Length: 155
Image (cartoon, rainbow, N blue to C red; front, side, top):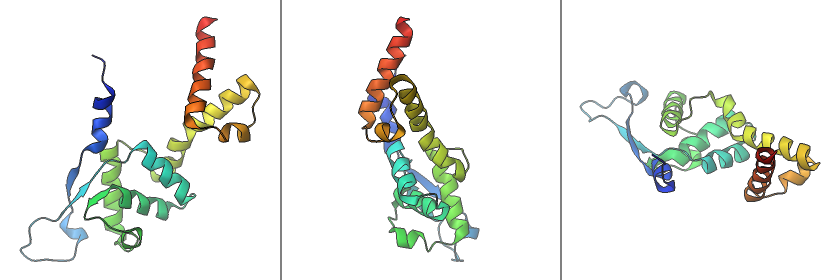
């Protein structure tokens, strides 16, 4: 069975109600379990976070929480004021629902590796510099990669 584009993209629109462990919150006798609503991060979210954080792991984690937290919605400044244990729990949960199981420092590699490979292939096949490739849109890069792949299959 071949999946449709709609089916593939549907997972990015799912919200996940997540219970916060009581030990990560201030004591509130008799209160119902505390929950938040998270959404999975998309490739676009990860690229924006990587670009905005410039290898700052704290900012990267804060942006991940800010982007994924549906309810309650928090500003980045509010997210950066969260207790560290709660922030770590949220990032781990966001990684899980987003299908990211790599450590935080590998997030940059996850986002950048395909683009680096594309730059290498285009430089090798067409003699372009990394600067020339970096000026291209993703659509242009994909088009040229498909051309290279098509030539390889024809040979």
